Amino acid sequence: MNAKVSTSGDIAAAALAPSGRALPLLDRSARIQLVIGILILVVATIVPSALGQAYWIGIVNLAIIYVVASIFMGLLLVDAGQVSFGHGAVFGAAAYAVGIACGMHGLSFPVGIVFGVLAALVIGVLFALPALRVQWFYLGFVTLSAAMVFPQMLFAFNTLTNGINGISIPLPQLNAPILFGLSALSIMTLVLGIAAIATSAIFPKTLLGRRMRVASASPEAAQSLGISPGRMRFIAFMIASFGTGLAGVLYPPTVGFVSPNAFHLDMSILFFFAVIVGGKGQPLGTIAGVTLLYLLPNVFLAQLIEYRPLVYGTVAFLVMLLMPAGIVGGVVRWLTLRQKPQRMPALQFGHIVDSAQVSLPRPEGNAIEIKDVRKAFGSVVAINNVTLTVRRGEIHGLVGANGSGKTSLLNVLNGFSASDAGTVKVNGRDVTSLRAREVAKLGVGRTFQTPRIFEQLSAWDNVQIGLDAKLSSNPTLVSEHFVGSLRDILGPLRTESIPHGQRRLLEVIRVILTDADILLLDEPAAGLSPEERLAFAALLRDLRDKLGLTIIFVEHDLDLVARVADRVTVLESGTVIASGDVASVWNDPKVKPLFVSVRHA
Image (cartoon, rainbow, N blue to C red; front, side, top):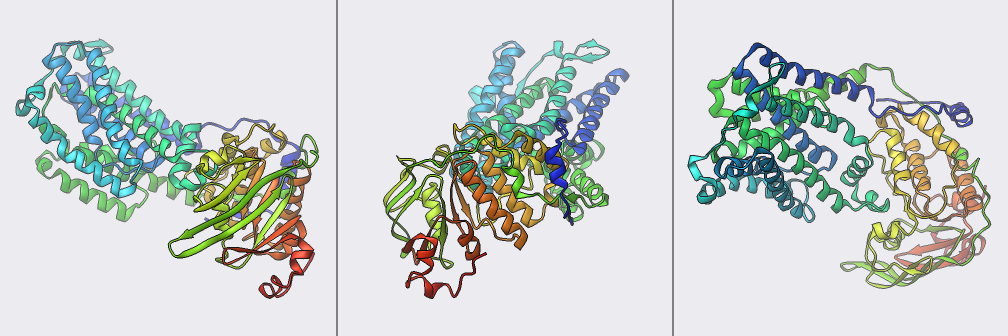
């Protein structure tokens, strides 16, 4: 979608008078889908009970249970970016735990629920551990094997599971009408369904949801914000397993019987494709997916029940061919395209610190100390015995040709790459062996050559994750007035509407809002217009002079470097060939051959 960028001072007016209105928790599409989804579940549950249709009561309850399991499968896939083809095993473990507890040992259903959820969490842990090492379809293959083995294990441990005979679970008290013809089981299923669809809508807007999506989209950006991607993946599996376990424990009283044949691979395929076919990330998507993949072939086309995998594959192929975003996702996308292009305000750099609360004196001492650092990738030496000191409150430029080791040096400095030799200190603390998220929590912020603006998040959420991070104990100096105006402007804006230059600025704003006192900026001016570069230079000076920040930036625009840098270091083939104030470095005989000319603004 094309975005219109205003050239007037729209943000100036907003910065002077933020509305003060809180943003709605959900956008309009999510609110509508949530309401429609709840209405569908309520009507589908009440009507068969009111009419006394026992067959349809069971079908609807089972469909809602599958919707719940698919919603938590979607959380794992969409929010955490984890591909799992084995969630049928999690569901089956919970169902069988209830069957063993209640059907074989005569325990009460609440006790069976506890055992069922615990069993689901155990399987979730077994799935989460490989997720710490492998990703995407490699992880999918691991979980796929678990789904294939699970029914065989139920047969093998026949003394525990009753093997091929299965387990009968008579719980008539749960199916007796207690309120408006609704049974306790129908009420529990409806409440769980409503809670699940509400979770699917609200979770992405929570702190954990934002962090999980960032970790999924860019593990590097997540670590630079102090987030552990591995921890996010583990938590995602636990949440998904807990929700799927709650769905699984309602399966035995709904069906009245569990057997190994009920939990074959096609159940896992159903949960996965219900998310894909319905529309990833859409609250109403799993209802559409389960309706199309379960209700139609199993209820209205019962003669095709033996061909369920073929039906799933055919439906998924046709939907992906005609509506790549899924049924609900395709409708949302079509409605979005019919709207007028959004007007993107021209964000101005100067307003970030215009109303900073205090003007800080420049601190003393060294912020960064790098000594004899070496980093090689195989036979290629990216950094060759580099020694570098950056003073606190200094703007330090790193320049050099492509491949000279500038970004590699930043990666070693903030923990993305471990050095082969040498030491790195941040504010006097040795960080040589620390991981990136640990370095970040010492107050080191980072931007990247390609702006890490995430399509999975709204425009405002892309900035809010900087506020969430809080990388240092420093008091927040950026004006709340500015943050409020930025929220007003970005709140209704879709991320896809943001042009490249403004994405670069949003990433810079985000790292500033982390309250980091050391900023590592990798080619921050790339893609900016000449006017934006001038404003950006002024911003860097303000960050140094007003907020007392230390800034190390990699840049190819030598004019920009000359305008703002206190000192400059020149790298060539991983080696420092010159370092010092701008004038002395530019006049160094070793540097002149590398740069034909430098124009000073």
